[in-house]
Image 1 (cartoon, rainbow, N blue to C red):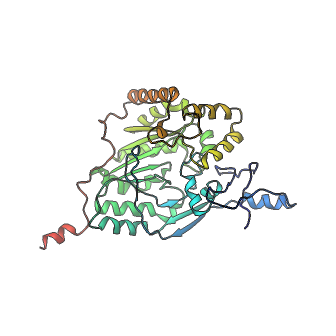
Image 2: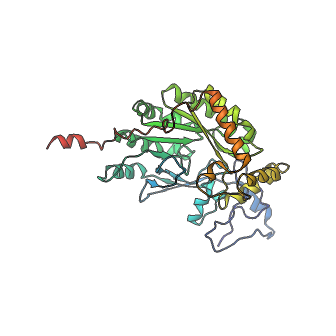
Image 3: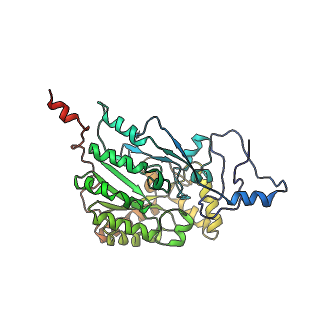
Length: 367
């Protein structure tokens, strides 16, 4: 079995990629170690040419369902698996292990595009037993990552949702969402669409290191403005919050969100499930060695002494005194900026009363 492109703790990271290592997934039974066989210079040249490979595939089903009590939706669609944005903290990275691929470099260079997603969605929405609930896009992969420019899968999904009056909620870090304002605008006018743009930091240097192939922070805020001006309810996700790296920016990000027309904002404390904890620690030591110990100490203080807390509820917000302070800070910032004014339970567009299978009403009138 050939060695991975990058292996080992000390592998040299590649420009424009988040992960610096490519560890085996937790389901693999064969381990690998870097070995100097005398061909180092040639191997390094090959490693530096890390290209993104997008593989088209035909999925068997497209709507994923969950019953997690701390997630505000039960249905989601992931048009892609893997994400070229390369966010080092991404909790979705471990999903690549199910393909015997690494949650590291593989996750951001080997992308799988579900080209039949719109076709499958139309079939699933047309089934007699389908119960209309909001469908979330962006739960486990960014629906507007670079591959979307050529594949247009997300746009196809939105076209189907508009046809059925199926409500959607989108989370993205890419200004490409502006392309679909022509679909989202009319849907929003019916109360069927809302978009959250994730703004992790306003510091372009931190963003470049932490989420290397995402749209720049200032450009994301411009996208929020474009969405709001088009009448599309827009929000900003301050996610993830990383102690000692971006937690001091909460108030500034919330204020900037309001200035650009956002109506809502939410935050999530950084999660480090499975392989992500190893990837993040390596990235942290490489990029911010003087802060690394402080960051992880505070993470553990908010995670019950662990790198990660998988428990429902606390996994999103953390636990303990520091987590409580963070929650209060965020609430005060939102109140000051005039965000989250809707009553609890409102905001996310969930009007399911307009759902209709195309042709069903006309067919009913024939009898």
